[in-house]
Image 1 (cartoon, rainbow, N blue to C red):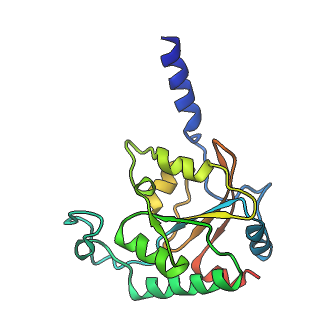
Image 2 (cartoon, rainbow, N blue to C red; image 1 turned 135 degrees about the vertical axis):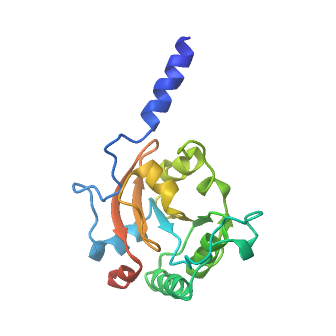
Length: 197
């Protein structure tokens, strides 16, 4: 019974507080002009929501993750956004050391256009009852200095773990992982990558 109680307590501590927010922490925020320098030092997790999509389509008829004909896909604007972000990442010399994406077609295409080679990872998508233990580990797990973990996923799983505000399509949250939790230090909209130097 004691073990069950400890497991429940551990699970409760792992959940975000009701007041959790994915807005940058005011005491630890990194301003956009300094963000590229910080990312070059490494140790961060960069979580993107896929870029702009065609909302005239849905995922309702999807048979599996590779069934792109029956999913909401990137729009032409979304492809342009992903290519532009990728050019800025390359110019800033922020090569991905680890690049993972949800296996959905829109997230894989976003990641490939931005980062080149990417590994599909179900943990960015799969969860139960609003919890995403695999994604939580990817957001909180340590990242060695000199490298960063790049993730391309969806807005709902990130909000479920990190709290509001919801990520816009193509928006990135920059997190400093802390083992079991994380601190959001910046959020970057697609057009704001041009401001990083």
